[in-house]
Amino acid sequence: MDGFIDIYCERTAAGFWNEPINALTNLAFIFAAMVAWRLAWQRARKSPLELTVIALVAIIGVGSFLFHTLATPLSAAFDVVPIWLFFFAYLLLVFTRISGGRAFDVIGYMVATLLGFVAIVFVVGQLGAGGTLNGSLQYAPALLAMAVATAIALWRHHPVWRYFASATAIFIMSLTFRSLDQAACVATAGIGTHFLWHMLNATVLGILLVGAVRELPPAEAGSELEPGRDRNVI
Image (cartoon, rainbow, N blue to C red):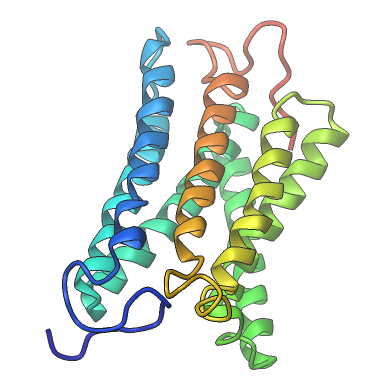
């Protein structure tokens, strides 16, 4: 395998199984998706958008597995693209649920999020920090979005705040381990800490999915809001 990508501690040469721990820990994403899918499927009303978002978590696991085994530029795209597809699809799901499906509100939320995303990426690029912390700063928009969602949900006293808060706290830990992978290479006997990014990040996505399924269910037919629950919380 010529021209392989070597950016993690565990990889020391070309080869499909040169990152076995980094590769196999992607099963955590599959497990998280299976748990959320089971919860969503048990509900009488099925939501195509919700099921798509859940499926994207499984695809993240597959894409990351391909990258940590093939280590090629193409497999790197399969690793990164599903992550950001999930980010925007999950936001679309949440915005749709909290707005009762009102198209104007959903579009407004998504445009504001996209502008914020571009602004953060621009600032990180201007500071020349994009390559620091093992590239973890690329996930700053996701961390900020989760923190803001937690604060607003808590302010509105919506029970989903607990899921958002837990996911945010674990995501900070996850990013820390992702950032320390190379620095901890010697101390971890060549294993690194990137595999913990996989396991903790799968936990984060699982919590976000379960939170959406349990606390932000789709509106009943003919009604914007589920009886007894105000979902306009963010």
